[in-house]
Length: 332
Image (cartoon, rainbow, N blue to C red):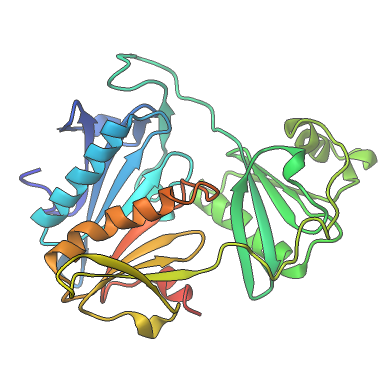
């Protein structure tokens, strides 16, 4: 990593037996599902070099490899004077910034421990996304890909990579339908405008809609679906936004929950911002070395302690002064 971040471009390393090894440039965009990687993106803004560090975890990577990737990312962060924005990337749930780094991404089976060679790319693993809420507040969650997950009051998107199937029952709210439209467009943009998008209501399969029929077949067959009422109140989104202060002002590192408000962020500490779909680690400009070093791992531990949550949601570290629109929007 000695020359990392010295010029504009991308650097990639793979974790191999607790060490990080430079990934061949000819294979940039290819990742093995059994491995963990560190991806450094260096770019220039107003004649200043800036950095984003992504550590990517394959779905079958070992805990040792994932831990090494996280630890080495901290080392890289220290080497670059704490400047990078850090992103934890999980296979199938990658951030838009990560996906934008490569013309295409191939996920290959196996990994360094398996010794698999010359394997074919895996097919995209479909996922079912649940969209719930009101016009001014909607939440998108991944749920089990089954008809048991559906209800007649919310919108659901079955994501098959280049084919998106949007189930919009007649009882869905306007905010949910609008959010679904923006989600479909965002996924299309991420995938090079090559996506086919299909929308349908609960009985369109009976009208000969082949895409609706595929949707039901893919989820295990059509059967009785929960009513809108059984789907829950749209104002009750279960997970609430939360804010935690990480401080060692008392002499020991402590984590305490505080009211969720932008004004609660202070320069001397680190804050864990749980925005439901993303967890941000906000680092104050004068935060201590211990707070800076431990903030990211505390955020991951916090997520792990909530097994009902999607464990693949993004965890992003942002420095004071480098906040993006997504972060600021969490407080609106």
